[in-house]
Image (tube, rainbow, N blue to C red; front, side, top):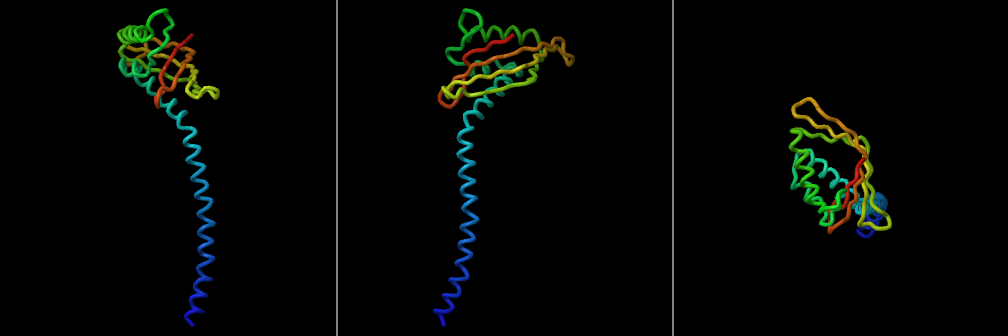
Amino acid sequence: MTTTATRQRATVTEPRRWRCVCLMLPLLLGAGLFFSACSRTQPQAALDASVRKLQSALEEKNIQGVLSLLDEDFAAPAPEDGREWARRTMLLMFSRYRNIRIMVLSSENRIDAQAPDRAASNARVALIGAEGLIPENARRFQVRLGWIKRDRDWKLTRMEWE
């Protein structure tokens, strides 16, 4: 009788075991696909985060924060040291306006498929400057940024605007 009872329990638990495996398999496959997709988008998320850091540092008038995002070989629009040009330009802009706001009207950040350590950002932005609460100056720009991945961080290599 014990053998029969054991067989009955085995036949009762066998379908449960298969049902559990059948339910867990899609979950495990789904989790695997999710995490592999996350690892593929991690560089894109890091690039997007660097763009947001740049915007925040500019709005907060954090010169060191901006300079920390610039690559050693940052190229300035003028024929001089890029990092020094950026520092002087920020000092001039920050001394002119007490409050600075950057409104991103549209943007696209993309990693180069042929060179995954290179990326570009294109954006339409409105730069709003104010001494008090009321904006005194608002201008629209088309901005193009070039990025390079150094270790795990994206660094700004160039900036152009019109």
